[in-house]
Every structure is written in C-alpha cells, then in structure tokens.
Amino acid sequence: MPDRLVPKIIDSINIAGSDNVASFGGLYEGGYHIQHSPQEFAQLVCLLAALGPFSAYLEIGTAAGGTIRFLNDHIQIDRNVVIDDGTHPKAHFWASQNRHCVPNVVDFIGDSHSPEAAHFLSELGLEFDLVSIDADHSYSGAAADWNLIQDYTRPGAIVWFHDILACDGVAALWNELKVQQTVLLETDQFGIGVLKLQ
Image (tube, rainbow, N blue to C red; front, side):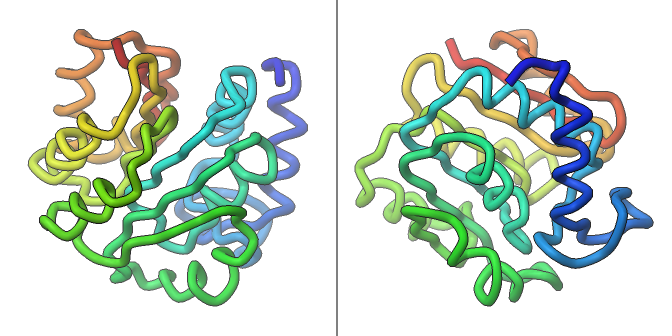
C-alpha cells in the first residue's frame, strides 16, 4: 500500500469513526472509536501494509479497540493478542463492539506489568513480528512494556509507539530507543514512532 494511498486511508479512518473529534480529529465520534489523528494513523497503516503480512500482532493498550480492528481491516494479521487493563472510559467498546470484529484474537485484561501478563504471553508461545505499545504513558511504564516484549519478539519485528511527542515519558524512552534500533517512521503530531528491531 504505497504512500499515494494515504489520502484514501485517511478517508477510511474518517468513515470508521473517532473516539474524540476534539482530541484526535475525524468526522464524527463513534464507530470504531479510533484514538489517533487520521493523518498520522494513515501513515502507519500504509507502512505496515507495505511491510506485512504479519503472523502475530501484540497490542499493549487497546482502550476501545479501534486501532486493532482497523489494522485488521487493512493488513493481513494471522494472530492477534491484546493486553489492556480495562480501565479506559471507552474500554467497554472493546468488549461489546470491536473485539468480535478482530479475527483470531485472545486478550488479557489486567496490568501489563504484572507477572500474570508475562505468564499469559509465555503460555501463548508466540513470537510476535508486530507490536504496539500504547498503554502506560509514563517513562517507567512504557519502558516496562518495552522490556516485557523482548522475550516474545522475533529479530526484525516491527514495534510502534503512540504519543512519542505528546507524552514526556514516552518521548524520553523513544529518544533512547531510536538510536539503538532502525527507525521506519516518526510522525509529527501526537507522534507515532515505528522501529524495526535488530
């Protein structure tokens, strides 16, 4: 999916629906409840479509579930795994609306930093080639999620972060990681950062 298709993907994101138009933009609130700027998210979708298909995707921090649903609409992903603490005000949309639209999905509702979350991933026995970190936006929280995935990702896996500009803690971690890994994308609004692991 080349960059020239970004405007078409923006249209699709707008049709899918925003979680909060005032915060993220979009045409209306509802639908998928996507929590990204359409312009930034479209860049990510087009990049991942060009890099895919993916065998296993881990999303840490799913909130309403609009992101994982939209990605699966546009990218071939064989297995989907969600870790989310279930405390976001729109989390009920994941359970009631978006989850059943995501194929081959399992989820862990609880703290991603807990021993139970690590046990959950261990029991799955998957090597992820695509990971999203968009949960605890403190430096220590995002770093803990980064450390968690190390045992469960394959070499060359794609890891993307949200809010690398909007949240100081995520920004600090991103600035450390981007000199150690290959950067594939950095957007300039809220900030989506995409790394390819060594």
